[in-house]
Image 1 (cartoon, rainbow, N blue to C red):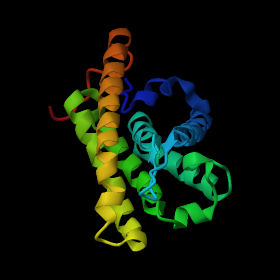
Image 2 (cartoon, one colour; image 1 turned 90 degrees about the horizontal axis):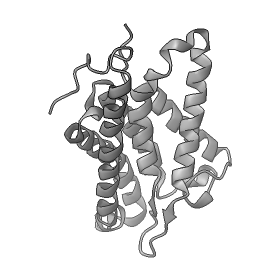
Image 3 (cartoon, rainbow, N blue to C red; image 1 turned 90 degrees about the vertical axis):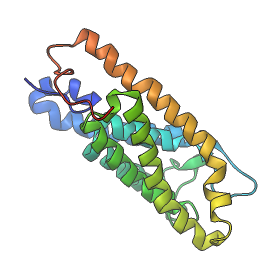
Image 4 (cartoon, helix red, strand yellow; image 1 turned 135 degrees about the vertical axis):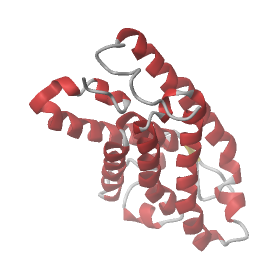
Length: 207
């Protein structure tokens, strides 16, 4: 019996030879989802970093697709934006965005998708507490890349005020959304696919 590691694996085991093509479509779809959430953008007059929905898109992609596919989805998104497609926040594009003040956050998206994806593979997205922890860890990875990069532009004395503190409320809201969506989806699927999916056979992570 195939045991589903992440949400999308429930749909893939029966595809056989078409699985590779399906995974390529999933990676492309992930990049599109991130691009769409990036267009939810609120510029801040005092900071070069806007409030966007793309961090939620990145974390959701990682949790739903797993570490490998989630990371590939982010890399595809970054490649699309660097190549000139208007997929970055506010419809921006080009290598200058990746090299600008927000470039560290963009690079951190790949690490965040990998971390949340790996934790989802361990079952952390099936309970509210562990879902929240995985989302917080994913956000921490983004800031670990984004803040040092931003500090080069705004200075160490201003980096927290411009690159972290204004975004904490929004980050907590996104964590709350993930907690509402992911465990609930697993619970719903568990009612309809209790035997064929192996939902109840994988360790759901720490409480």
